[in-house]
Length: 117
Image (tube, rainbow, N blue to C red; front, side, top):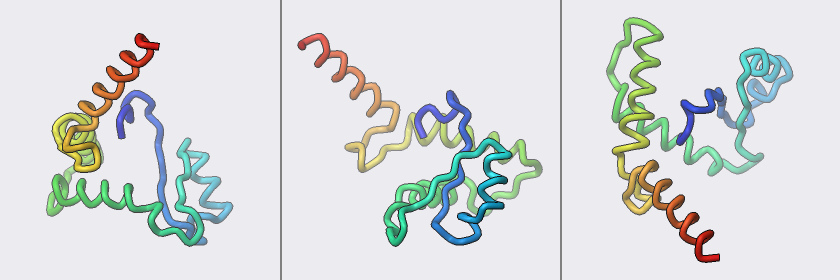
C-alpha cells in the first residue's frame, strides 16, 4: 500500500479462477493498464494479505455506507489508505507501528548501516 498514490498503478488481485485467467479477461486488464496479481496454484494463503486488507477496509470504513458517486467512493478510499491506514493504523505484523513509521525506521537503519560500512 505504501506509495500507491505515487505510482498510480492499478492492480487486480484474484484467485486462479478460469474467468480471471482467461485470455479475454487478461486482455481487458491490459486495456485498462491494470497489472494482474494471482495466487499461486493450490495456495490459498497467497490471498491472505489482500483479503485481510479488504476486510479491514470494509469493516473499518465502508460497511453500510452508500456513496452518491464513484468520486465520493474514490475519495473515501484514498483518505482511508493515505491518511488512516498508512499513517495512523497500527499493524501487529509491523510491531504495532503504522506502515509510514515502520518505513521511516527501516530507512533510518539502512542509512545508519551504510554510514557504518
